[in-house]
Length: 289
Image (cartoon, rainbow, N blue to C red; front, side, top):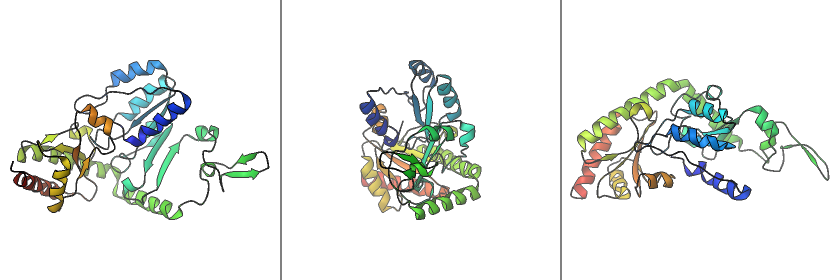
């Protein structure tokens, strides 16, 4: 179920290091099969990487349990939190992962901003991956001494404005209370999963129940391409995303060329979902269904 951002870098790495990739399969309703993860961990992987919340299906994975399983097998763990940080309470210490990454624009912050959190001892061991100003303490002709973290990994002039904006976004969400944000989105998802199949019986919905799902609902209208669905919805003032959502392997697993996806956030309401339903009625009218 991974976003390409948590797949393609590992493809490049295993090509460079002559390594191997293995994958945890999912059930038909979009839940990771942890019994297969248990078997895969017997291969003694160096790193286990997985998303906290699926950007396409909304599946909220049992990250703490998965981290404990991976650590017991001697692996390091990276969690992709891009879809979790804006939508559910996140405590990196409680999760126990070695690395936790998320992007700013998903949490109402500036584009191009983001965070990689890691355990200090790992960052101390790691060499810098970019060279330039600020990441050095002393420079000599044939060697250099690296600066302290985080500067060791922040070569060149930082995007100060984006960092400040990211901090403001974090303060805003923290002020709302992430528990309240989660409850709001869970209510919206439960409402959508109830009203959509009732009002649009032919709609195909994908993903787990509201209790296991973040604020996204992917769907298809039979016989109508998701891009056409999105275009008609746009004319009705309803914005959805259509395509593969940077999860091509997931769509291959589900045997789907594409889906349309409704996404909810702190500013979304039940009235927005009612507008989606009305827009889907217009889709049926336009395409004669």
